[in-house]
Length: 70
Image: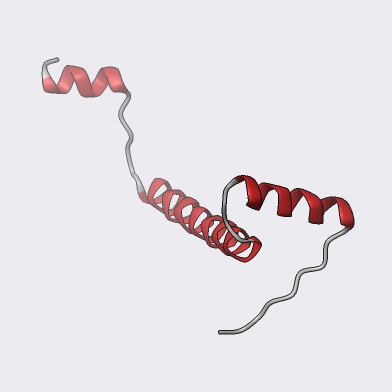
């Protein structure tokens, strides 16, 4: 396992440590999970944007209901 260093000021240090304590987790786990979640969110957004760009026609909810006879 490797170590990644992060420099923060005293205020951010207190905020991060207090939040980790509140969530009953370590600072390391908190930071790791936050970073991985951020990366996953960005990948999801990029995938969504590509899917929308590839869509030739979209339908409104009313159009879908009408087509389905609802």
